[in-house]
Length: 87
Image (cartoon, rainbow, N blue to C red; front, side, top):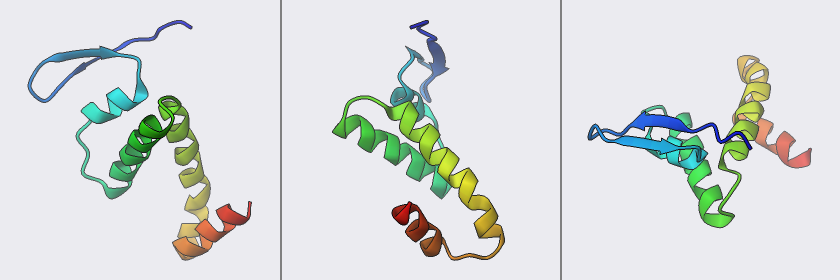
């Protein structure tokens, strides 16, 4: 409702003004595999539904935060994913 537009510089030096989460993530250059997966998740959400890209990133980020203590305890990631599926 408040139209919080963001101004970004693309790699070619052009200016992009948007409030679309997917557009913002497309302009970000990342090398971390998890960050790339998050961007792919946003892209898939946009293609499938056309909306909710920011929400899906926030939800996935929170799920990663909640799984961190289990990873520190050397729990295998597939066990954590099975727990998410059961929940």
